[in-house]
Length: 385
Image 1: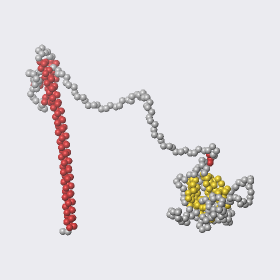
Image 2: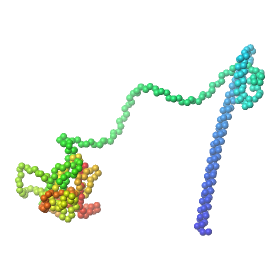
Image 3: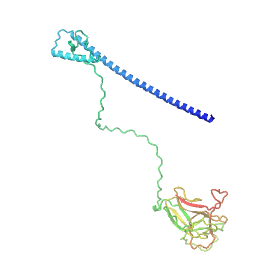
Image 4: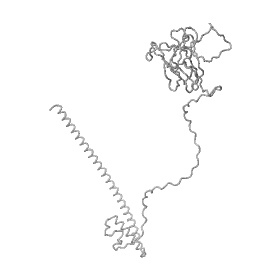
């Protein structure tokens, strides 16, 4: 037989032995459980039997003591000489005696016996067998045991309301709660309640209107203006000039070499135009408009560069691309966020090449790439809250 068959036979024998051992264990467990159950039942039966015999013995003792007391009283009554008993009293006495003797005989002997029951003195026999006895009433028996408690009665009617007690001592002060939310800001004395509680402004570059949304209103629209790109001096930032200017009473027209100069801002998109053209077919070398917008119920505005969207709970005013003067021009300028769907100033097709703005691109090096990409246009979003 191969080693594999031997291993199989051995495993089978071990399994049969384990199975037989399990059966034997279950048999002895059931056997012990049965023995314990029999012991418990036997103990209960013995206890009940002992309790019953103790009760019966106590009853016999009580009856024996009562019989002795009555016998003593009967002996005392016979010592008196001139006892006159009428016929009716004698019959009652005999009847009470017979009842007592029958009860005693029922306790002492199941078949009541036929022999007379001795009463403790000679000449007194059971009246049922022709004897005669002159007895007197015995003493009252002992008080019986208290009976069981009766069933609980129904609750009685509610009593009258008691007198109101004195007021208790005041408790300790509780822990202060957390501060509540801040309420809305009040209005200034000279502030129009219809204009909200804010007043912050921003410029929407490249558009003549403000976003059509609650909390934003147009102050004025006009033209984007800045310094000449070839001048080394002049203004650095761009301005939004209104399209209906007011002039001082004192002015002088004509060129003045001792002045700072402003020019209209012109889009420069020579190589690539990422803007939407839903408001203008082309914007290259056209002048840029602008609009000044006021926030009526939001107090903060922020230009988020390289983002298309606002943080949670903020309101997006508009989005677009960052633009500024060219990197190799003599004059530096500030950066502005131009709307993604820009408009143009009508009649400004001819290039003047004065104040110019170019789209801003990322350059890798000190600026990390990734996340930024070399040569890609930088977006922007104007947000408020």
